[in-house]
Length: 258
Image 1 (cartoon, one colour):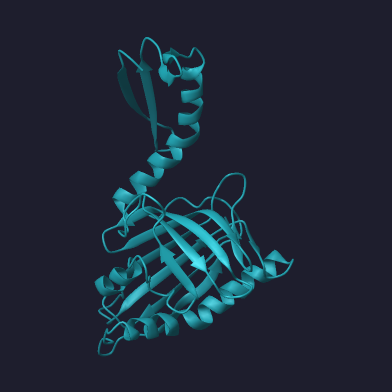
Image 2 (cartoon, helix red, strand yellow; image 1 turned 135 degrees about the vertical axis):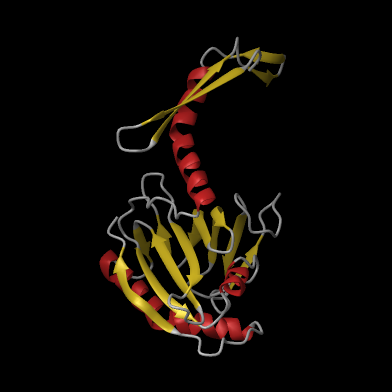
């Protein structure tokens, strides 16, 4: 666009939120063509359509990230969450969760993490990571994007692409599944870290035709093994459990119901 100006207005909504109105003023839109710059009469309409469909989600996610909130559930309907405790310092736990090539909890999954073209090995907002699986019956890959990263407390990966055998978590109607991690100090002065893992997805494939049973199988497996597995993984990385630190399921797992 040439001669561009942008006006942004903020208004309160009846429900307590904020309405954002963005007004762009320009003479015309030009793009490179075979014969130089070309004007496109329909381009402003296309730009408006694209912005309306994407800015709400991006701005909401950004504000939630800045305030330490988890993203609004996508309403995919098939997710669940679980909370448990492990006997290690919170900052150490989060440091290992954000280990790009060896994220905590994924050490023994037969998966290799790598950087897509143009990326780097730094977990930050917008970072993309490829997970390549090599075990028979589970071979393939997924690509995820870091959409929330707050201090040493909250991390959310949104799966943007998947192509693999075996189990897959899928979204619906253009909404991608995501996995969120929250870490916090245990209450009442207890030693250790409380971990909350939230899976938000629509369906599960590769575990049979019954989606409800597949989800239940995932939830059961997570709660049966998570505290033990994360504790063992921290110890394998050279960390020492805190004296009197707590290990185990903190709360009963529950379906997301979103």
